Image (cartoon, rainbow, N blue to C red; front, side):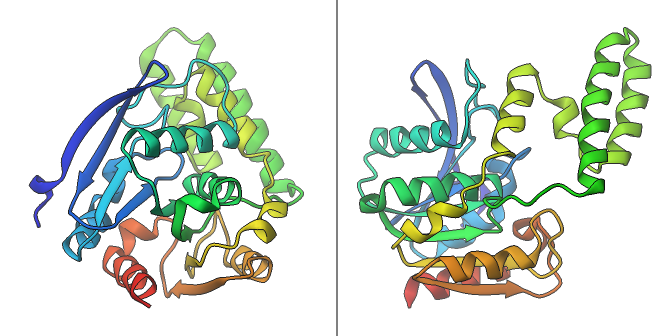
Length: 262
């Protein structure tokens, strides 16, 4: 299967235009991308899984890719509710749910709330547990907030571009500075949500997949979550970081297929 065989489609849910990609035939597998990304970033994995007999759907979550942003400030619950509506509109009665980072956070909520919908669950470095922020996190938060204020006060696009690069280099990410007001507020909300208490309520057979060198969601989180999930297994990809699907798509697809066929 080539990338050209991945279809791009569009539907409307509650007045929001939703873009999604679909490939393959067989059991439905729904992939939820992480923050700052869209369906495009998962195409290499999508194609590999579709080639092995799965119908793989990857939506651009509201506010990402080609999908419109929500009209109000959503939290993880609202994104999980959206996934339920998306699944119902596409008549996905039972399916495999696969979430990465922020998408994994949404998948955790969905799995706890709607276990009857899931065949299996795959969580790739889900950003679902929170710790007390350290000095570095507090500095990043301050610089990101200050940066967005400074950029809004400068009319020159050239100077804005230069300062955006400076702030991005300091905080290590550009998604906060580049987001609109609603999306910034959504980000502020979801990064404070700790879903630790939900893991013990998830009974679905679950694969935890992690990059050995993941920094945004460190490998220590994998062991914490593994202890709390009663029906889970853990696979670590050596040498991979947080963008595991871009760095090691073959290994990600192989680990997922091994889990699904077990």
